[in-house]
Length: 160
Image 1 (cartoon, rainbow, N blue to C red):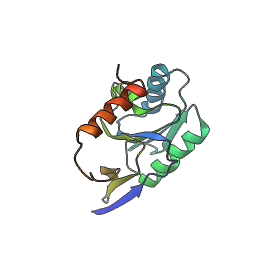
Image 2 (image 1 turned 90 degrees about the vertical axis):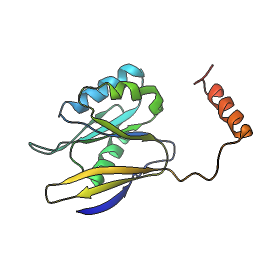
Image 3 (image 1 turned 30 degrees about the vertical axis):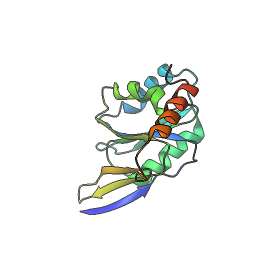
Image 4 (image 1 turned 120 degrees about the vertical axis):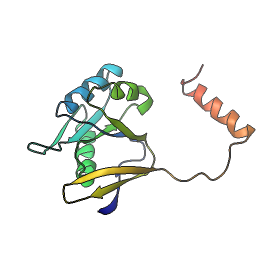
């Protein structure tokens, strides 16, 4: 087996969700899930088929994000993987809906951090083995950092 890493290329402010699914209907179902979770959402979805014509399927509401999803997923090249690039929303706004799509098997990550995807390739094809999401911890949170975290969550409206 050959193991390689693929860096997700994107602007710093773009979040994404990387996962594994199992059926060609994934593209339409992911689009519906996101659009109904966040009206006016800007996103692009790409999906690699693992059988049949084995095409990289794609759709979305924003052509730039859709192209970004296609380019990154093409570089990964793992069967039955999907990538959702998010514009004006965060994963927390749509992740539950994405998880509830019947075809979705797993979520590898949902982040805006610099990310490397670990891909294994055999004679049969390629698969995602895991991800490196952001950097390693630099320390342990203290009382001041905990207070800052709580204040931030309230500032952005995620906690009351």
